[in-house]
Length: 175
Image (cartoon, rainbow, N blue to C red; front, side, top):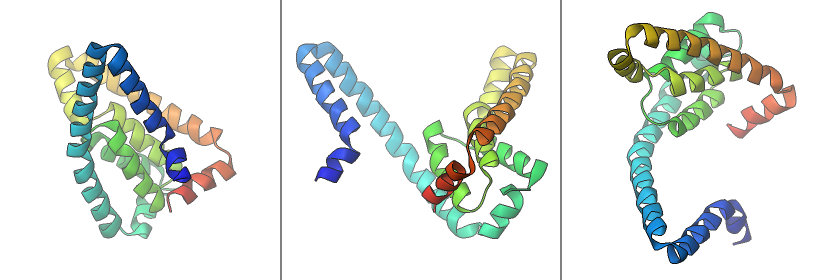
């Protein structure tokens, strides 16, 4: 029981805060419940397909293949694959992290996982097509190029900021 309370302390604290707000300010409490319900429904509709895809990725893609194409030393090929995987993905950013975990488990480099997460968050193909139609091709291409440069800078900086022990711990957490 103690482990349960420790693990879910933030969640339980938020429930208590929502209950207090519900009694003190009923309008805000009802709005909070409504937003929570919408977020829960969205997560329930996104999470099962992501976990099915993760299971398939885990079974179908061999560790050696993943290491060859996105592991250390994969070079430009690994960067492009990580960008394409992230850009072609659908769903909210929180769905990217389980995929990133499987990539790490299969031997992808941290750098390419950072590229994947950055691409998922900023360079989704459906978003780019909508943006081009709404804001124009020049704006879209400019933002895309700047986003790619930013993703690369962030990935390099983040990887360099982690020492070998921290990198090893990240890989161990995903085994």
